[in-house]
Image 1 (tube, rainbow, N blue to C red):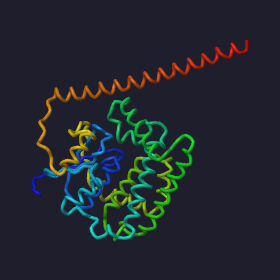
Image 2 (image 1 turned 180 degrees about the horizontal axis):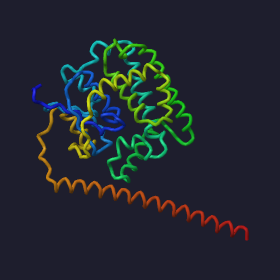
Image 3 (image 1 turned 135 degrees about the horizontal axis):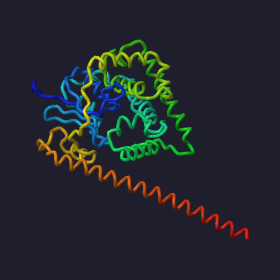
Image 4 (image 1 turned 90 degrees about the vertical axis):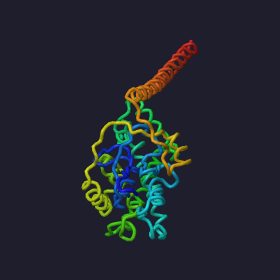
Length: 328
């Protein structure tokens, strides 16, 4: 690697006192910090639902989160000196611990962020992902993601309480197992940092920093003093000691999730030729086109809502007329 090359980790914006509010972005950030790998942060604001974020640029090499195994696995495989899991990923408890982190705990945090909050405006997820978008578009995208989370877990109006209890029960079991496994050690495995430490710490930081005090998941994590100590120590050493770069509301030039899939699967290891810098007129046109599409989408939603209300009112009126005729 050339000395003058700038390594860049592109993440979602900072919030809640964290360098980024996105758990996947934060785990990649912490992993690189653990590896003592020099890099700078850049913030991606357009396409908030893109599955390529976070991604890492190192010279001509680009690794996206939507590649096989995710960004951390790409870094371990392709970037020298970044594999923190060497020699410990084959341990018997590794797979089980990783499964708890990436399923039970990840599912519980997703539930709290997208389903457990009362309305989109009070959800930390809205702040993390959509607060820089025009509010109608942000609301629609939030609602779509919330529906996807419910569908993923099979949550319906009839079984909502049972599913909620199941999600929190699994999360509580995971916290208990991790607390016992960690004990008084500084890290989860072999008393040295690994990708699992980065994944858990990202989860713990977002849970403690972003979720409200009334959060069930937050209260369950607080029951385990050694896990909380682990998270707070990480924040002090890896985040507080490194000032977060200034956050400027701007659009990072990157493709959408649909175009990035084809780009990453075909030749994700090498950047395409450098893009021509867009003129101010082109940037303004692109921005206005996005707002136009958003306005059209909102218009359709409002139209459907009004028509549904009108149809319901018409049905009620017909029923009322029918009942009078029957009495006569």
